[in-house]
Image 1 (cartoon, one colour):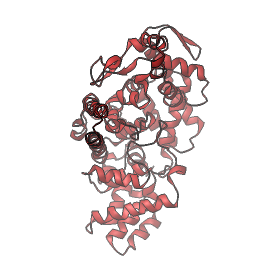
Image 2 (tube, rainbow, N blue to C red; image 1 turned 45 degrees about the vertical axis):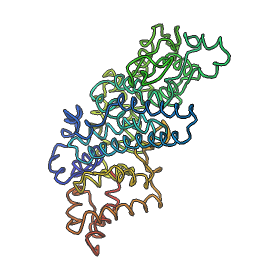
Image 3 (spheres, rainbow, N blue to C red; image 1 turned 90 degrees about the vertical axis):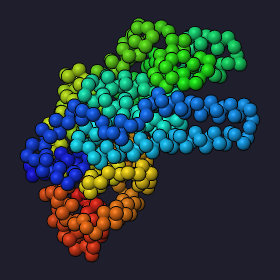
Image 4 (cartoon, rainbow, N blue to C red; image 1 turned 90 degrees about the horizontal axis):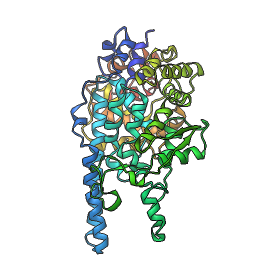
Length: 467
C-alpha cells in the first residue's frame, strides 16, 4: 500500500521527520520491528535526569525543614521553606519534561518511544500530587523505558515497586492490622488513627493495571491484595521512627507493617511470606486472560482504531498468552495486524501527539521545558498530569471539538511564525506526509498568502491532525 511508510512513521512512530519516509522505504514493518528492543542507550538529556532516590532524599530534607519550622512556630521561616520545596519540585518537573520531549523530537526509534509513552500512560501517575511532580519523568525512565523488551510481569513489578507509584497511591503508609506495628497501635487508642490499611494501590492494580473493570474480581479481592502488598514502601530519606530504615529513596519491603498470613485472590490462595507473596500475585495477574484482553484492547485502540474489532484484539491477546506475557511478541502482533495498515488517518492526534509531530516535521528539538508545558497546558494535556490513575483518554471523542481545534490553530500559527518565511509548506508536507497529503489540502496550502499562513494550514489540515 502506498501509505504504509506514512502509517509507520505517523501512527506507530511519533510523526515523520524530513527524510524519514525515505529511510523507512519499502519495508515499513521491518523498520518498526527493528525498534522493539529499543535503542542501545538513552539520550544524554534523559541520562542526565537525577535518579528517583536522589530526588526523594532532597525532597525529604526540605519536608523535614518545613516540619521543623512549623514546630518552632517561626512564621518567617516556614513560607521560605515551602517556596523552596515548590521550586525544587518545579525544577525537576521541567527538566524531566524537557528531556522527554527532546528525546521524542529527535529519536531515531520513534516506535519504541511511542510504546514508552503508551505504557507510561497505562501506569499513570499524576503530578498534581506532591512530591510526584518531581518524580514523574524519573518514574517513566526507570520503571517503563528499560522494561519493554521483557515480560509484562517484569514491567508490572517494576512499576508497582517504584517509589513514585507507591507515593502516588499512598502505599508507603498502608499498615496491616495484624502486623507488628498494627497490633502495637491497636493497644494505644491515641495512635489508632495514624495507621491502617490503604487500598488505593491494590484497587488500581486490579482495575487499571491488569484485569480491567468488570473482570470478575470483587471488593474482597481488592482488600486481600491491599493486605498482601502492605510493607511495599520506601527507604527512609531523613524519616524518623517506623519509616527510618532502608536505603533512602529506594523501594523497601517493611516486614513490621506487612499483614501476615495466607490470602485468597480470585479464588487462588497465596501462602508465600513477605515480599514474595505480592510478587506471586502479580505474576498470576500478568498471565490472567482478563489482563491479556484488557491490555490488548488498549494497545489495539491506540494503534488501530478508537473502536477496534474483537478479532484483532483477541488475536493480540492470544499471542500474548501463548508467549507467556512477552511484550515484544504483543507489540509485534500489533505491527503484523492487517487492520493497522488499512487507513492512514484513522486516529485523531492527542495534543501531545500533535506537538511532538510538529517538532519532528520541522526537525526541531525543544530547548525550553516551560514552552512545551505551556503549549500542552493550553491544549488540555499538561505533561504527566492526567488527573487520575486512569491516565489520558485515547479517543477522538475526548480531544475533538471546536474549542480544542481553535487552540491547536492558535499554537500552530505561533509555530509557523517561528519556522520563518524560509520554509516551504508544500515541501514540508511532502516530507512528512508524502502521498497521504490530499489534493484538497494541497490546494488550500498552495493558495496561502504567505509561508506562515501556509505552514499554519498544513499543521491544522485533517491529514496532519490524524495519524
